[in-house]
Image 1 (cartoon, helix red, strand yellow):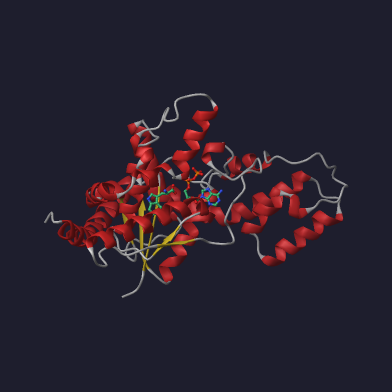
Image 2 (cartoon, helix red, strand yellow):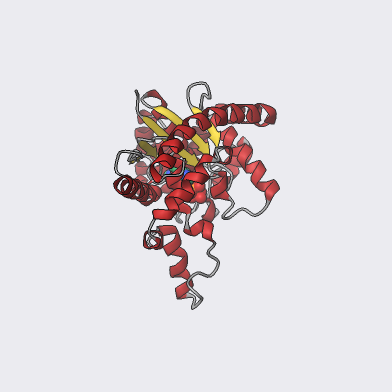
Length: 331
Ligand code: ADP
Ligand code: TRP
């Protein structure tokens, strides 16, 4: 049997090119080698999104993003986390044996408590139990599907390690290979895609280049990329420019070398560099955007695809859950 790759994306904001290059594209490439499973982590999203209408729409957007980037629901499992209730049963079982101390060490939780401490607030100010137990729910997502590899960005590495720890402890406790131990899969080229201000592209920094913006708006956003005050005549160092680092992610080798020369020679202003960047991004995203617009205009199609996917996913999940329930003595 071939190995299983599984990943999920939270529907918490519009998809951006960091998500595309860092998560969606590398995950879809694994379809060639692995039995692949992709899902929309909607129950993870309610930790932060408290507007039902907004969440509903974001779920459609993420679903359409996956499909327009090439996910083939006939070849991969594609479903909503919320449509596989086995996830939440497994999550409860795993919570019973997960040490609280492990959750205390999770980066996302620690970041909030550190900020609170600095601000002189109670360390748990604004922390909900969903954030605190996030890694357990994520472990359930992964372990329920007998996952071998989890393609994700580096920021998720700790969550995968915790999942492996939780699974190992469970297997040890109940004696046997009940849960498969997963590994992270990190794509090297696009580890961190920079945003228009030079920091990591992230919706929390408000510095994203949206994947599906209409071409005019896309150009406008690219023109806003922050640069230094070098004049047109001055030679520029491509390796210090985030315009160039974004360019490299979209252009072919020859184009990259040609533009590198132009930077070094001087005589090219930042406006031209941004125009060049816009053109390579537009060339890549235009066909995906057309797919996306088409898919988004037919929500019934998205509903049907997800419904079928969830039915198939539940059959796989039920088998794992039977093993787990029997091991703990609740069957
Ligand atoms: P955001 O930082 O915008 O909130 P998420 O945390 O929802 O994005 O990330 C969803 C997926 O996209 C994750 O697998 C994450 O590693 C990947 N990802 C997000 N931003 C980037 C980026 N700037 N570069 C590479 N990958 C990214
Ligand atoms: N935590 C992941 C993120 O923020 C999303 C996620 C939830 C996930 N469950 C998962 C990713 C299971 C991989 C496997 O990006």
